[in-house]
Image 1 (cartoon, rainbow, N blue to C red):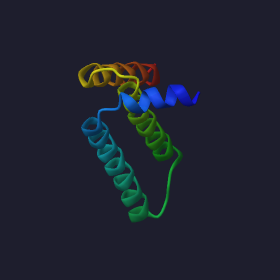
Image 2: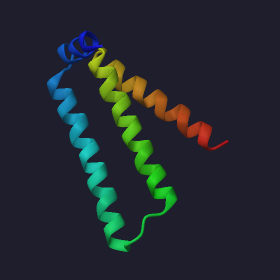
Image 3: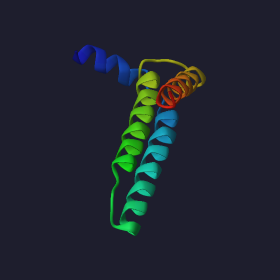
Image 4: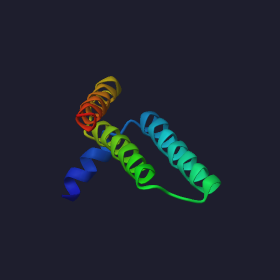
Length: 89
């Protein structure tokens, strides 16, 4: 298990992971700001936050597995499209 994690970290493009992490932190900060403004957190808002975090971590995982940035972004986009279409059915 540690060997797999080591390989993932070796393949990690630092600039890409920094950009993805910044986006994730901005999304979480925005969610917290909106929750603080209206002093309530609806179930829908929690689901939105969890969905956002899962999508970001999917992108981070694809990057850590060694996929080129473009392919990791495409994979995350496809995941987002599939999960969005499933929610709408």
